[in-house]
Amino acid sequence: MTDMPARRLLLVHAHPDDESINNGATMARYAAEGAGVTLVTCTLGELGEVIPPELAHLSGAALGAHRRQELAAAMRELGVGDVRLLGGAGRYGDSGMMGLPDNDAPGAFWGAPVDEAAEHLAAVIREVRPQVLVTYDPNGGYGHPDHIQAHRVAMRAAELAADPGVRPDLGEPWDIARIYWTRMPREVAEEAFARLHEALPGLPFTGAAEVDDLPGVVDDPASIDVRLDAGGTPYAAAKAAAMAAHATQIAVSGPWFALSNGLAQPLFAVEHYQLVKGEPDGPGVGDDLFAGIAPAAPARPEGPEERRGGTA
Image (cartoon, rainbow, N blue to C red; front, side, top):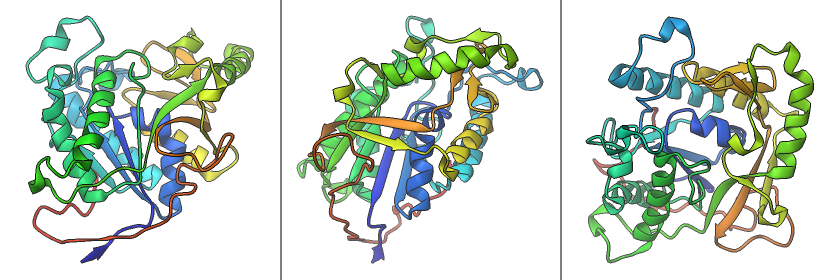
């Protein structure tokens, strides 16, 4: 029997780089504190637009393979050693932006039956037994089909993993105590963009993005249940380094970055979460995803199907 870390966090993301942009500081913090941090990435982002001219020749499967290497490098920066590709490498392909023909391509994640994909994730849940799951809101943060599908699959997998009548061959049932969606308070974003506009003339970017370009923006501050502030800590630097490791997709310049459109965005050292399943530790905004959850380190059976961690 093998002991597990007392605190276990599972994150579900659509493409390599999403995890570092949205939750990089969170992942670095909990990994450094000894929590078990598992990342499940649903596609390899084969349709991403490449920024560096010297890598512009990459596309399709070659880009996916390169982004897998970037993901491994980013996870080294964050100290995360358990990275899974949903259903195995190549199971689901990048679906492209909403409304494009790529959405309907064979193998695109957007077209995958939700329960089928969720069973792959339920197997991971029953193996690593996380107390906390982090994923996107129902709009996938900003409407990308793979992000929306990742939300659907994550939420459904949590249900399937807890149901003893579903796929007993996948392991003992596990009910995740808390599920959070990644969020960004509009007021926080607007303040950061005001600072960005002041700094923009000295930045190597063509302009500035808009607040509504950010994933998970919410108007109601009351929807924020946890605020993790990595400002001034090594976790903020680890997040920036992890984002920079995704060099095909992200250009980082100090506390700012840009995607392939060249429009600058703030690199947030503070990450926000909305609790959508489970009980909060108390009133007000907390500063720990696990607060109030009793630490537990159940043993798990060893076997040929067991994954002991490793990078994608």
